Amino acid sequence: MLEDTCSRYEWCGTLSRVIKEALGHDPVHGYPHVVRVAELALKISRLVGGVDEEVVLAAALVHDIGRPLETERGKHHAAIGAELAPGILRKAGFPEAKIPSVVEAVLAHSFSLGAEAGSLEAKILSDADKLDAIGAVGVARAFIEGDRRGRGFEGTLRHFEEKLLRLKDLMYTEPARRMAEERHRFMLAFLEEFLKETGLLGHFYSLMDST
Ligand SMILES: [Fe+2]
Ligand SMILES: [Fe+2]
Image (cartoon, rainbow, N blue to C red):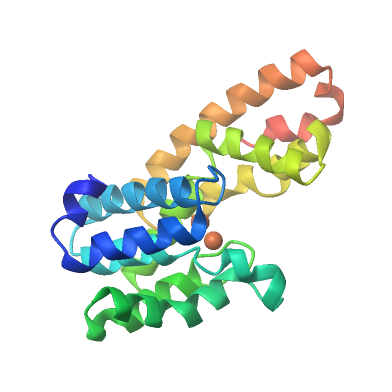
């Protein structure tokens, strides 16, 4: 869906190349994540209807552009992304009048920043980004990231408890809520088996209450 939709907008090929170059091939936070978020955002857009697809697509592509600069600038990547987005979009030839809507969505996309999404396009980006953090992909991302942060299995399970198992309740749109329920059920099934096999069930009873 992304390739087809992208080919309809002149700016999209250039923008995708810039983002790919900037974020690299890291499956957790890099370009593959951006592609999955864009696919999900387009799917949700079509199911919701009445959405500015051009804004959703651009917002999905640029939403994590601030991430590589987070440590250096000491700011949340959504805030950095909102500063960088206008220049990048302008350079790619994105319509000037729609830049503020993209910036709004980028700023509101983050769980940790706790920002509220106002526009429908911002809501869809937030939903798509959160959907990519749960389900089978969410499990894979959590364990890769857990290892990078030296969390170990127990630390990663806490991350499920503190964040990932809560995401289904933060969806704005109905289609995303349905997809989130499905992904949530998969995570619970995975966790049940994982806790049994690792003998950690006794430490994480609360995890299995998150139905
Ligand atoms: Fe992000
Ligand atoms: Fe993201």
